[in-house]
Image 1: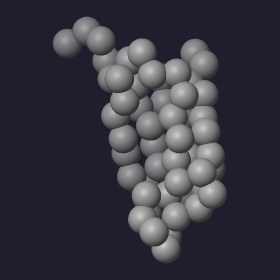
Image 2: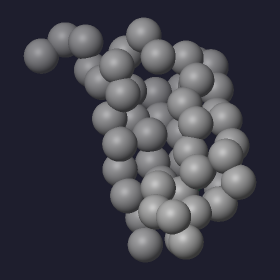
Image 3: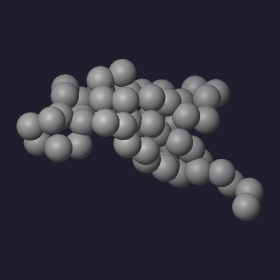
Image 4: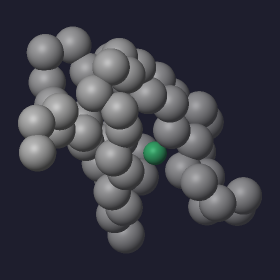
Length: 54
Ligand SMILES: [Zn+2]
């Protein structure tokens, strides 16, 4: 099961703990760096930076 989360463009780091209580995983942090999206290695959740231009 994969999910998708959009974050503000000025966010540098996201954390993921799996979301649900029992289905969660240890909290991990991911740095965007120069990427526009990161994928959690535990649960496959995808974090996507919001596009600034419309
Ligand atoms: Zn995760």
